[in-house]
Image (cartoon, rainbow over all chains, first blue to last red; front, top):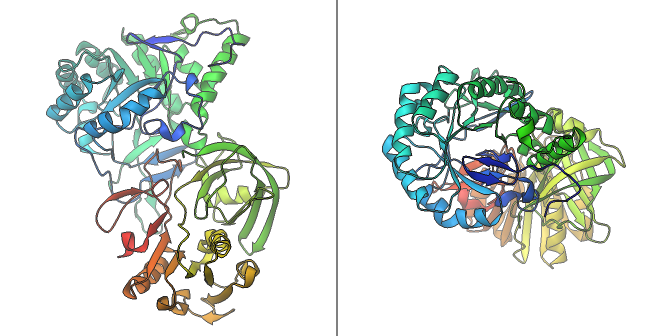
Length: 307
Length: 252
């Protein structure tokens, strides 16, 4: 159990799901949780968003997959994953036993595969579905649906009809207009929104004079994107009524508190787990310490304070 | 077992050759001891300092009695420069032991290393010798060899090749290898060297193991940045399912 010296209550409710902490491990940075089981005290995590799934497994992209920038990481993993059925049979039971709520991150190439994936997940004890319409690295990752609000509206409403699970739609910062996108997803039945996924970016190898990545463009994450992510979370929180999960370069409790003050119900920590595998736990502990120091008992007292 | 993450105290960090350093830390008793061929993610800078990612470095040696854990590394960029600046008493963050490690097999074996790829082979050679396996060391370097006396410990036969001819055989280390003399060959070095050496072994019907290297963000199997396709087209995660594979998996 978590230490009791703190008076801070970190509990939050996300789309009706009680979470023991506002800190969620972001998809693609935490496996399905097992890899971190001896590193992170899972009592500090509200949920784990598993590696992004597609109905059938995917091999991911060829060539370079990682490129470091001064304050970020460009990745071109390409949604490598074992498929929804493998996840349900082989990964989910152990993921549930870790303690934090289990969030299944679902991508797709066609609306049919999104629907089928959602139907399969609906029949499991997954706590939340995070609908990925924002992976920039594969056409099949849903980015096609993450740019234009009308396309997003269609996929979200169709998936909505396939599941009673709380549905959180993960938005791309590459959307034409992030507020319109958020409103479209909300209107289409999303119970919550998470943002932002990675920013489309690139790197060129000056020795070969060619793009580093085979797909040319790849996704930038890490501290470099945080202020832009924060601005988008702020804009979306001003516009929608459903809960928002803020993410994008969060590495410290102070970063997380900014997103909560911008209106986020919960936050996700992603790339920071690579630089520091304790990051999720440290962010949650740091939030509790800040709350104690500032006489804040629940996050409701500060959520949206900056709006 | 999944990896652990902890701080370790630097016992000594010393230069071995032009750009080669040896870092020895104390492995606190509550943490798992490594197997030969396993590695750790090393970080000697704050999480918010560049470079963003920790650096994967193989275990050069681990001494049971003193719990002294050593890493032999080449200074290549910002991360390894920061490792090279570590002094006695400094702390370094370790995540590991990661990866599968080498199996200890055979009765008469060779370890074949190229450059900084020799690093994991010293701990392997020590484990092989301790298991009663007759072990020969074939070591290739560009110019300046290092750690030869250590490889020669316990009477192990050491043969050296250099690209420049400054020491030992003038040419590639692969040329020193006669696979038929051994029942297992362990290989670590640049990929072209591993390919040539593995192919030579497989042509002679000799079992061989290679230790692969890829860029990786986490070392834990979470980022999938180090995924590789085997010759058969299967996907493997170098950090978790490797880094050690039978030679034929990649160079068959």
